[in-house]
Structures are given as structure tokens and as C-alpha cells.
Length: 221
Length: 256
Image (cartoon, rainbow over all chains, first blue to last red; front, side, top):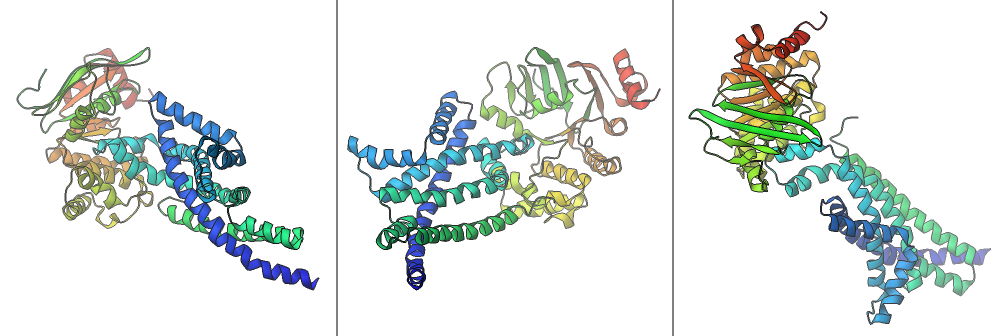
């Protein structure tokens, strides 16, 4: 029993460190890039141009219709066969960004559509272009609607980054796997890994609450 | 048709269909500088569509909207963004549902157009906005968010936002229809003040008392045509068309 407790204590910081240096930056970078992709895809999807909205529709369909693990394998193991070798870290960032781009695009599209048409008209009637109206009037209001579902996307992403372990990215779960293999204490170490993910998500959820409150300040309750 | 000497705006042959349904048949109207033109008529008569066409929010299928010394937009041709913008430079719209920007304070709502579109210096826009808010009795609300105001206050901010653009023409789309009855007077009072100051206004409203007191010309629309037009004294007391008479009866004596 003492040995196990010792293992638990000894492995805690390496696992947390894997989270700090692997999981969290991977999630943050991928999410930031993913949101930009999502905004572009959402606007394409809302565009009157049929080619643009068609491309966006197909993109979203592919991303949502295929497993993230498969997307990761195509990029890391598949692309090198046509001469395109990408290192583990960038491969993971590419896969996760594209994935977030597909899911968040629908969230952002719905959020933009939730802003009343009169807000567009008010922007136009004071002389703004549609780009100006989108940027200054519509998106700030859409953001308020989009934050809760996007926070969920982010929290899912944090957990999904554990998939990067299969393409050899050193992140939280990869560290745990190594310790587990070395010590053969699978139950304890994997439960510990789960606990650390849970702690990270608790922190993120409280951050989400604070952000929602901030964005809600101009709304009647 | 181009505007005559003292006319600010001339509209001719405005026509618009939504699918099979022709909502504007052929609308002609002229607005002179400093004049208040009020459009009345049952809902679905096309009066709001006429008003929105003047601001390019609606695209008619045909017809010309021409401002004196300004754009003349022929809607039977494809209309460019620049043409639409040129219409919007001349007029400003007050909406039924005020459409204030909920994420901006009162002051930010008012200076948005001047600062972002007209490139007025921020300090100048702010002092102008403060003066306008003062005028409508809302100076102390400059840092409030729209949801903190009553309906009547929101609509007065909507009017100030339009005024801040210094348009040649003010457009009002049923500005009091969404308000509680006791708040209507505030807004109409502000509008009457603007008329007295010489602003040129086109107003779609059901407030016949406003039309009677303030309008220079009243247009009665029904079924996408202007059925009758005239000075309020004449139109309200001696309408020449049966449809006008029936409409006025329904509004003035709803229980009969």
C-alpha cells in the first residue's frame, strides 16, 4: 500500500507537468487557430455565394462525420506517404484546429443568426458597410450567445488532446502511459491522469462562468 | 423625374413585388425641404416598404428615388453598393423597435455613426451627442445601456442616433407603435419639436393626432397605391375617397 501511495505522489507532478507543457498549450493553440477557421467557415456558410457555402457545408460535414482519431492518423501517418512529413506536435495542432473549425463553425453561424435582423438594418442605416456592421455590431452580440457552447467545445478539446498520445506527442496522457507501463500500476496511474484532466476542466468551467457574466453585463435580467 | 426647385426628394414609379404579391404599384411622391409628410393606411398597405426604399433597406423592382443635388437611384437597373450608400448618406431611419445596439451605452450608440462612418473626431461627436441627449431630456442617461431605459427613452435615443448623422431627411417607421400608451406622448413631443425646427421628415404612423397637428401633407395608402393625399385639414375632415373615409372611421370610431 505504501508503495502505491508513494507512486501516486511521485507521479503526480510529472503528470501535471505533462498537462502544463503538453495538453494545455496544445489545446490553447489549436483552439485559437480553430476559432479563426470556424469564423471563416461560418461566414462562408452564411454567404449568398453558393460555391462558398457549398465548400463550407462539405467541410463541416467531413469534420463532423469522421473520427478525430482518423483525422489525426491521416495527417500524421497518411500524409508522409505522399511525401509530406509533419512532426507530431504540428500534426496534432493541425488536426485539432481543423476539428474545432468544423464544430465551432456551426456554433458561430447559429450565434450570428440569433442576432435580430434589425441590428443589421440599424448598422446599414447609420451608413456602415456589411463588414463594419458584422465586426462592430453583430459579432459582439453573437459572442455572448456563442460563449457557452464554445466553452464546451474547448473543454472537449482539452480532453481530446489525449489522442495526441497515439502520435507520440508528450502530453499529460502520454506521460501517464509511460509511468503506468513502467510501474504496471495501471488503475492508480490512469485514475490519477483522469483526476488531473478533471481538475483542469474544473478551472476552465469557473473561467467560463466568469466570462459569461462579463459578456452579460448589458443584458436585462 | 428630378426634384423641383424647393423639393428635397422626388420618388416616381416605385414598384415592388414579393413573389406574386405586388406590394407597391406605382408610387409617386415629393417631399419639400422642411416639410413633414405623414403616411397612413392599414397594415400591409405598403407604407413601410415605401419608407424603407428611401433608405435602401428595401430594393424596389422599379422606380426612381432622387434627392436634390444628390443621388438619383433608378431601381429598374441593378443598384450598386455605392448608390445604396449614397441614399443612406442623405437620410436616417428611426425604427419601430428602436434597434439600439444593446452592447453599447447610450452615448456609444449615438456617436457610432459619426465616428465610424463619417469620421468625425471623437471629442466633437461626443459633445454633439451630449447636446442632442440634453435636448431630449436624457443627458444623465449617457452611460446607461439601452435595456436600462424605458421604451420611450429608448426611442428618444433612437431619434438622437438618427439626428447625430445630420441627415437631410429623417425617416420614422411607426416610431410609437411598440410603446406603452403613456410613453407615446414623449416621443411624439420630440418629433413635433423637430418638425418645428424645420427638419424634413417622412413619418409612417397610426397616430392621427400627430398627423393632424404636425403634417404638411398626409398620404393615405391602401393596397400598394397612394389613394389620396392632401393637407391634414382637408384629408381628415373631407376625404374624397370611400376607402379613406372607411379607414379614418375605423381608427377614430373603432366601436361604431
